[in-house]
Length: 321
Image 1 (cartoon, helix red, strand yellow):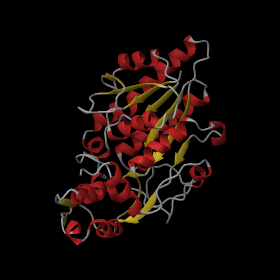
Image 2 (cartoon, one colour; image 1 turned 135 degrees about the vertical axis):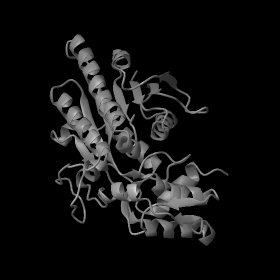
Image 3 (cartoon, helix red, strand yellow; image 1 turned 90 degrees about the vertical axis):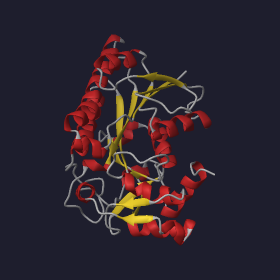
């Protein structure tokens, strides 16, 4: 039986991933465990463990179960990591250090036979400008935010622990996940979902940036597929380069709004109010916009091909009726 652990299993992507694993029986008869600080009142039916991901003792406890596949999703989001410097580094970087060392200890205790697959959700925030028109697989990682630096540090750790044979890991640089269900969070990118989700639910939305801002998006459904695909990937194909830029659909905020107009009409669009926010504008200005993710596409990763499709996924999966 395959033992699967999702760190951050109470979050939106963690719940989507767990639901996909169960609904599609992706890993036949798998034993699924979700770990997080808290869980939804009505969540995916799976074993849950609550605790602090940055606690070294908890890292040892989780690693002692010797999961075969680990999805590492737990993180402080971008806006909070920027505002609370120490917290961001503790949760987003030190937690990974403690957990990888706990896995190494289990590897050593097994005589080298225990080597779990670890899939880490990184971010396009690992990049920094100036940018080309499209970022290809050769563009260097030079983050310009604390969140991006923390994700980049974890990528390096995953790569080095894999090189030494303690784990078999890879890092997925997710595009902006949109449209996220539920309430807005502290991520600087939260408005990308908010300007679609809120109007579709008849609620006013705030747009803190110019409508010329561009970003690359994929749906929560696509994110869950990214993760399960990565869990079964032959990592020898990565040739030692264990961080991947993932595909998504690149568009401007104005193009997002036009897709909303096509889906729900002018009445929905009228609920979007432009209220500039200098802090968010500054963070978003340092992010990449478009990608040419050749390696990921060749390895079988897939995302939506239009923003209309992304809205349709939200309406099908999460829109309250």
